[in-house]
Image (cartoon, rainbow, N blue to C red; front, side, top):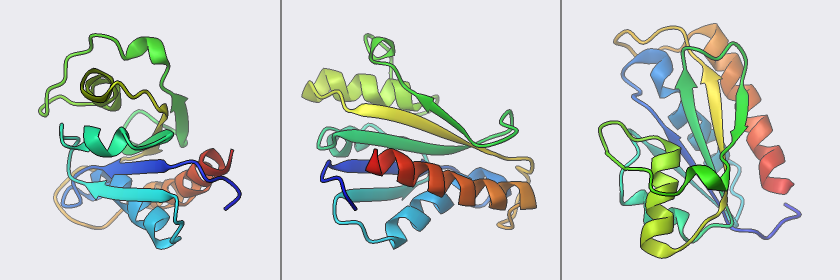
Length: 148
């Protein structure tokens, strides 16, 4: 890996609701690469405790399933969205968690939100073919963000 920047990848979602677990699958795939400068976390939801991990990073990358995405979308999270955003663990998103990180630790890493196409949110663990393809694509896009 050519970069020595510290990177935190957080993949989140419910693995018991089929495609909703895509973010966690992405985080697991990134972790399996074994990059020393990358901490990859697969979590059920974004919680305030994650702000401590984000505060240690130069880059933060979030991965989540999206019923609205037709292909994998990579959205840069601009700094100006991070001021005075409320954080609630029940309605949390990366912007709110980054705002909390800034408030608590005065840290402001570059950040992206990677959205993976998802179609099926019923109970179960099997992923739809669209989401499986999206996971592979998302991991490749995250690798590019890490080495950029």
